[in-house]
Structure formats: structure tokens, C-alpha cells
Image (tube, rainbow, N blue to C red; front, side, top):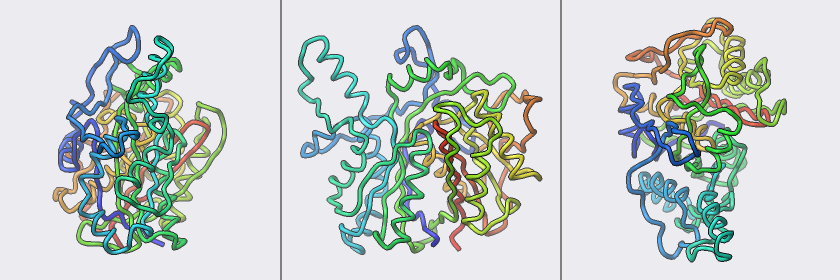
Length: 398
């Protein structure tokens, strides 16, 4: 069954709402990536941070107070009218919440534990519920007083892409009539130090698919869709297909040939009833690590032997980890939105120095546009630790 993404709220380094994000995304504006020196000792790193003031968690939900939930609340408030209409139409018991995250409230937990180790007491505002992986879904369901299924998926960098798959499954099974789905992840010292220990973090703006690439930049984001089985208005954009695989090659390194990535992309095409040549644009996972970019290049060449316009958007947003799948699907959503009257595509930002060891891909240049034909179909890739792979196809509502 086709599922429709009838509303979108988002916040990330590119902006605090979809209008800001779209303007800077299509302009290739990477000014949201700012060097900061207080995340990893002895290193100054570019990060994709949200610097605007975030909404406060309501006092009655104070035990759920975390920056992660504040980011999520900022995205939810953008589509609150759409959510309220869904509540009135379907009822609170028929609306689900499925989100992806990898950090939840771990930053608050880290500070709380540090205080406990120093002073043998936790801060007065510490609550274990802040750090549970289920916290974002629990918080959103409680804030909206929803009683449908509410849970979190945590599969590292595919978490929120998988949340969209699971949301569609709840609609397919008739368990829900609408699902709030997406993802949220916050910058925190744990993840930045962890990726730094893996020697995977770059001290410059990340440089995907270049011969000079040397690692990722990390960002934060919240993305929330209202998914329903029916189209609603001019902005209805569909999740046409989705594919997932788990090659289990290694706990952190991708399978070198791209076998699992190929499987996910082909499954998404099959699920959508499409052929590769019908895809108009591909948002690459494109982390700018040596191994990820190599395997993804091989996988894309295998699925798209005639090429496909593609780009990595991580130099503009940072790698938002558990939110990345939903965020980059949102970039496809914005490319299809009626407000994008120029049919602009996200450009590929890099130094232009190709890696001769990798297949040549068809990079989206600044100012490049979608063809003025319908239906338009865009694919987004997400790959994660443990060989966890997801591809989504977003398109014009049938």
C-alpha cells in the first residue's frame, strides 16, 4: 500500500523550519557547519548544531526534559495543526508514534553520572527516563495524549529510515490510521568522542567521494512526518517504496563490495514497482569515510549502470546519525514540494577531486534541476553499523 507523507516538520543545521532548510539546501549553503572545540579534548571539529532557542518541555512532562526531546518538540510544533486534524479525524487511539534515535537523552545522563561520581548524588533535574531509548516516542505520545502504538527504533544511522518502514507497516496492517514518524538525534560528547576514537571524524568540512576524503562531520536534527494511507492536499508526497537488508559484515565497517547496499536499493525498487532508470535523483549516504564511499560507489554503479543524478548532503547538515534517514528523505520531500517551483536539487559539495579507484557518479551541480516531468521519483540511502541498510523511494502521489 502507498503511504502518504502529508506534513513535515524539521530542524537541523540548515534551518529551523522547512522553508529555511529548503532555501539553504538548494543553494548549497554549508554555513551551518561551525567549528567548535568543546566536544572532543584537543580537537576543533566542524559540527552541524542547532543554535536557536528551543521550546521548553511542559512542566507536567519534566521527567522527559532533554535536548533531544526539545528538538523533537520544535519539529512537532511546526505541524501541530495537521496533527490536531488527524486526532479529530481518527481519534487518539488510532495514531501511532514511531521514531528513530541513537542518542536519546544520553548527554543529560552523562552529565548526571559525572556529577554522581564527583558528589555521590544526581542533579535535581535528572531522571532515568531522559536517557531511555524509548524516550522520544514516550514523550511525543504523552504530550499529544496519544494511545496508539509508540516505540523507538535504534539501528544507528538507519534508525529513522526504518521508522518510516515500520510506520507504513502499521498502516498496511490496519493497526493505525495515521503515524507520526521520523527521527531525532542530538550532538553529544559520547558520540563525537566515540567516532573520534574510531578515527572517523574530519577536522575539515567533510568531502564525500573525493580522493581527499578523511571522515565525517556530525550534526543534530529532528524530523517528523504525518503519514496516512490517503493523500491530503497539494503537498501530499508518497513513500512509494522501501527496502532493507542486513549483511552483518562487521560491527562498524561496511561490506566492501556494497552487496547489502545493493540489496536494499533493489528491494526498494521492487517494492515500488520501478526500474532504476525511473529514479530521477539519489540522495547518497555519503559519509566521506574511505570505506563507506567506496562501497556505496560500487553499489550505485551496479544498480544504476547508466547513472543517476546524485549528491551527498552531509557537508551541509552533518551526519545526524539516528535522524539521518528521515532528514535526507526530507530533503527529497522538499525537492518535490510545490514551493520548490524551480525544481531544484541538492548540489553535491566537494573539492571536485575524484577518487580514481571508484566508479564515476553523476554529481548534481549547483543550480541543477529535476526534469519537468511527472511522476518524479527520488531515492534516499541510509547505511549503518552492523551492515544495516535501508533505501527509501519518495515520489509524487499516485
